[in-house]
Length: 273
Image 1 (tube, helix red, strand yellow):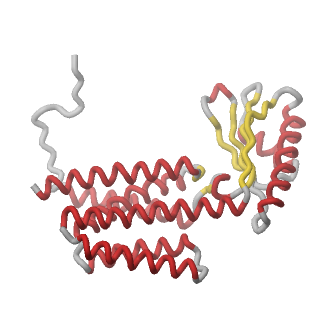
Image 2 (cartoon, one colour):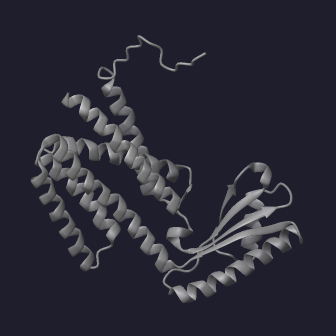
Image 3 (cartoon, rainbow, N blue to C red):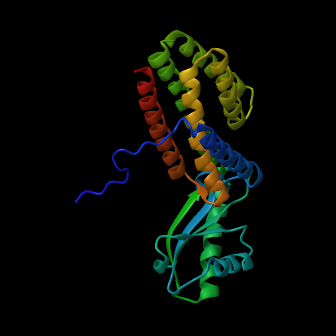
């Protein structure tokens, strides 16, 4: 017996409801952008640098109790998240080190944080009640480098999309390649001038959209806006829910970008036909 979600003969007026969907998407983007600008993003150890401890407790434990134990030991602003199934009583504890120190100093500092965290948990919950299953350390310089590389990956994927879409559907390979080359040179010069790569990429994406509109790269502009919509909503939801941004999250966003592009190309093929 087969199960069908969409029954044969169903006719949904997608075009007629486009203004409703535009309003919903616009409201969602505004909400997500507002959360990103006001609340910001909770950077994981991969990007912020510091110490991450995976701890398993012998009995049911609340994150507030763990926070009390760590704050009583003078540890800096712990971020605590439940890890795995609830019955496992496992938590991921993130402790950020000091900014502005070199990686060698950071490693020494984070080793001290690890000892203090372990001792404070055992003193609070009792001997044998806490099992430290994993400890990860990332220096501040490594975190900054990873953050810049993640932004670069997203931006360069947008530029490659611009070339592919413009060439395949609008037959403007030369113009799109020239535009991308100019943007790459601008980003490179800005990085040499010492401008933060994150701000350069944000500005470059905005300029890319404006130039696509001015040069009438209609297909490329639509694909880029659809991609930005999906990425902004995904990142915004993580900001609203206070979830950590890690390397796994970046990989997931790039995967979403791939699926978004694939859907866009299928729709463009139908339009061209």
